[in-house]
Amino acid sequence: MYQNFSSQRSDRILTRDAEVLRRSVGCLCEVRSVETNTMVLLGRIRIYDGEILTIVSASGRELRPVIYNTEYKLVLHIPGTQAASWHGQICGSSRQIWMFDQVYCFHQEEQRDTFRQPLNRSAHVLDISDGYIPHFDKPKLAASKPCRIIDVSLGGLQIESAQMFRSGDRIMILSMTLSDGGEPFSFKATVRWVSPLEDGLARCGCSFESLSLRDENRLCAAILQIQRNDLAQQRT
Image (cartoon, rainbow, N blue to C red):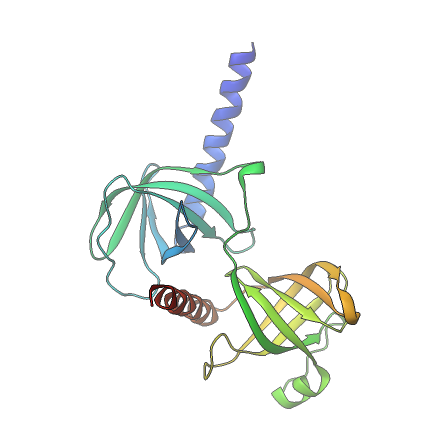
């Protein structure tokens, strides 16, 4: 009886995982080192045939050689769902694609939100919970308040602000740059949690509302460039 129940539960999990992977086709995927959690590739899911997950570069660049059977953590970003960590093993590669088999999801307590890029950048935040958003940039900035970006991922960001938000508030992040001289970002987001700090500040964890493909690609490229710069500094 117990073995039969356990087997049925395992089959349900496998079926659910397969459905999620089929929905992931066309979505962004972070490929990360299992040992260091460093992102080694930002890709898009090209094909899932029920067994093998095929990923191409999100930037269109040629892919570097990779060793067969190397294990990686895969962070899938499917619109409308929370980013989740998966495991996969290289079963084939070329300059255009990496192929993974033995793909499974880290369930429940194994999930870790550890793929955020630390930052310390200034920006502005505008409360849009009442639904009103000024049409032009200058009125938006005039109504906004300064904030600091603490970290960012493809799914959201953390900010510190003197403005007191509540879980569920809708905000707009304005004039956010991830590097000096970079084109500024503007994002709509929802506050998920709030943690008061000293000096009248609070830290807020926020999830992005639907990003345009252009903003998604720009954010991907900016995060990758930050990681390349960090790696270059570590080597010097």
